[in-house]
Length: 294
Ligand SMILES: [Cu+2]
Image 1 (cartoon, rainbow, N blue to C red):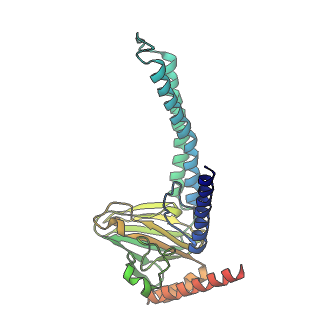
Image 2: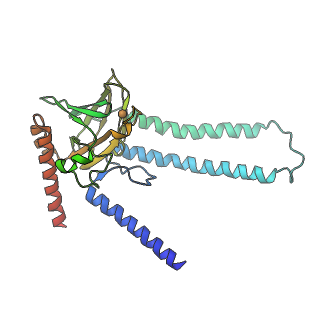
Image 3: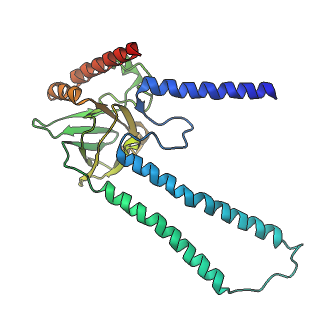
């Protein structure tokens, strides 16, 4: 028994350090195995969503326990052997009032903050400084930067064969099925508007750690926004079943400093792969300096 406990302790420790290690090296957020909670929020909106999710638990857990207990009481107390003559009661005004008013109060307590959150999601707190348009295709994304000199590029899943050429061999930072060839690059702490549409079927642009998910509908432009607070590489996926390669159209957003974004933008207008290479080299360099400083 002691041996089992010791090995369990070791496993837990190893798992914890693996999580710490990977988050320290990856500097990003992405889905993880056996994850039961939300990804760490990278925007205030996601923090609000997380708070609301935790708040609803205060209702969900007690109600589930109450219903389970009531069921158990009925099963044991009113079983045929203990209760051979069943009650013929069909009405009880007090109980009916309680089971009507109680749920109404619970629903109001959930509905009011829920609508407040929904309103906040549709009310950008400030004017956007950057507008990008995301167009879903079967099965990749086009990103258009609506800046002085509008330009666009395609972002598709990273093929294993292209890893070396792209300099993306680190599978913690560029995971299989989530890494892309060209990330959407945005500056940190900048109000970013995302216009979302599609060319063929309905897709959905979703970034869990930003708290955004918006359908991409052909012939229609939807709008959402985010303001990322932390630099890093974030992963999401198309979230509307869109055909055979639906599981293979990830979304990757690279949040960089304002200076890095300016440099990237100046090159990207004419040469997206070149701008990405330079940006990756610079980020790698600053990471090494930071690691050396520790
Ligand atoms: Cu899709």
